[in-house]
Amino acid sequence: MRSEGDSWDITTSVGLTALRVAAARALEARKPDPLAVDPYAELFCRTAGGDWEAVVQGNLPEHQLLTSDFGEHFVNFQGARTRYFDDYCRQAVTAGVRQVVILAAGLDSRAYRLDWPDGTTIFELDQPQVLAFKSYVLSQRGIRAGAERREVAVDLREDWPEALRGSGFDPTQPSAWLVEGLLIYLPADAQDQLFTGIDDLAAPGSHVAVEDGAPMSDEDFEAAVQAEVAADDDSRIFHRLVYNERCAPADLWFGERGWTAVATPLGDYLQELGRPVPGPDSEAGPMIARNALVKAVKN
Image 1 (tube, helix red, strand yellow):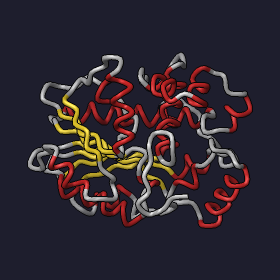
Image 2 (tube, helix red, strand yellow; image 1 turned 90 degrees about the vertical axis):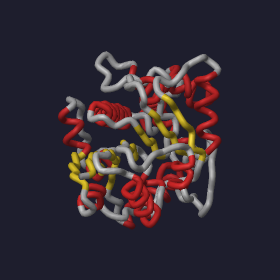
Image 3 (tube, rainbow, N blue to C red; image 1 turned 120 degrees about the vertical axis):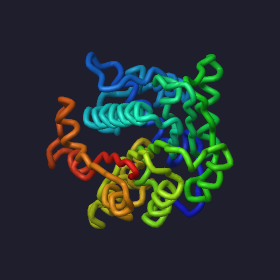
Image 4 (tube, rainbow, N blue to C red; image 1 turned 135 degrees about the vertical axis):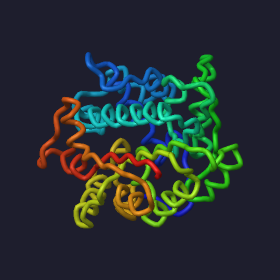
């Protein structure tokens, strides 16, 4: 379970979720019609070893693959989410933005795999051990970022705006912010502080993209936690890592503060991309139904 001030590396606690996402991206990239291709996702998993290497090698027992987070709908979800934020980055730099801030960067490899205009600076914020793992894996193979990449090793529950400014971020210039796979790992007050930090640092013409989601009912959440505890399976610890809270729907929060925001339900986006949407009786159905992808531009 989470505790105040807890920390992690890439193989513990919240850090494990970055490897889950990387494994799903690696599996998505192998499809004949992938929604997004992350050529480094498999590399991260192989370096981490253990079950993560087994997933991308196809060596996990079939029942474990199907009942774990790497089921069909989870991989589709991660493929769609990656596609959404990739397209968002391209739209932001096309609009002239040259500062990109990736909050809780994890194993995000966009600095390395997307095409960036000259003069673009990408700020990656996360726990120091998580950033160190990614940099080590890629630098050992001579893989270089396609833009100036600056690591900001900071806990997002601390004074990350000051750390970001100290790394050369210019709040007088437009910026683009990625809040992908993050909010559920923060309590509601920390979510509000995160949004406030973005709003305070974002000049007019800035962009933000957020993966948002409504909380589960208290009863359903407690049942999910107890099911994970009873399963005694380290691969199924998701609900024990998250906060079942939300400060406000992201589109409304930013919309009330002078941003033009649009929210797209995740199910609608999956349909748009031609991927199946799980029904309410599916294990993944309620999660898909609660999630939305939000983009906003500051006026």
